[in-house]
Length: 285
Length: 172
Image 1 (cartoon, each protein chain N blue to C red):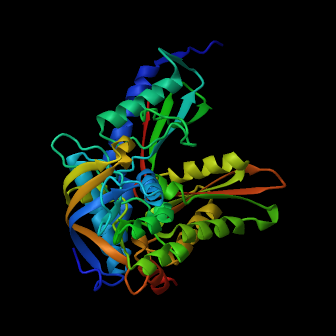
Image 2 (cartoon, rainbow over the protein chains, first blue to last red; image 1 turned 90 degrees about the horizontal axis):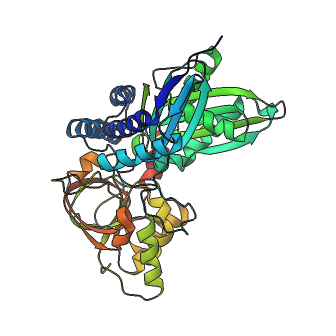
Image 3 (tube, each protein chain N blue to C red; image 1 turned 90 degrees about the vertical axis):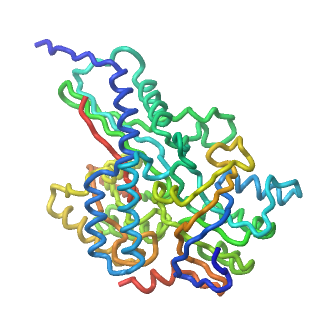
């Protein structure tokens, strides 16, 4: 049976990328804002509590006055789940995404934070603004687009390690606690901890990215992983780092874990840290 | 500006006055110029530097979002800047070991602003002008006039490190 193909113009994608980039940089996701407001009541350290109050105030100002919540508008991470019955027309998909990032950065007065050459040897124009694109092919003819702006204060403090199978579940806890402890104030706490366990070297890192982008209100569907998320949240909040490293009991807002099958010889674990300004937006096209 | 001889680790203070922006690229260039005895775009004697790379100003604004960036990335350049007269650094994040010791040796103060407070902190900056290294874009040297700009003293002249103390106090 022939399945009709849905033609989708890449210009629609370009415009959506630009709009989501700007909106996510002006408006912090409601689940994060709720979590920060809840943390104010929970935090016992006076400096920590004042810091949380300031952060909420910052997000209110940014939304009302339409300002970037942070000067680091990040490296854009674009996640695209494309139905296998979608046919992209009207241009090159990757160039459309790059154009959308360029347009959003310019129209939204966002900082040009991306260098086109990590070696810094090539002379760049400054607006190459590529995005890191992750594309999945899924059933159907819909497209689900996520645009995230990943600030590098927290990205820089992330970690990946290849454990042994015998290390088991405790490997996850070990790397999470060690990474958050080492990151301290640098990751801009209260942070969101994204954990990827399993797969290969690069799959674990991508799982961790997906985990850090998962809304805080969604817990893992598997009970024992849900329990592990809660237990690890308690352990990192016992480190004493607190909001901005000024001391306190709210170091992280959530620990989100994603898992994937892995080799019988391995146990890759990746920990991707997200600052409290975890800018992300998702729509269906 | 507060009296840097008197402020103590953990004190919240408000800064009013002129500071110089600093970022990875500008810090590297300044440190190289100091090392090579080349002329500096601005005198550094008595300067307070602020680790920030602001976003562009919208029409009618003094500056775009302008919160602090991670100081530790620039720590390797700070001893050179201290030798040229820099007295204090505003940034975010922690400094330990040799990075922190360099402050204590020079009697320099480390002040932390809140990371991710860019929209609010922009309102505490009343003037901004590029004064050097314009080709570096957001990493250019800006003279920034602060008005009641909120920071917390992290490393004071007695060598106390508030990030380390706070962590020890709240660890369970």
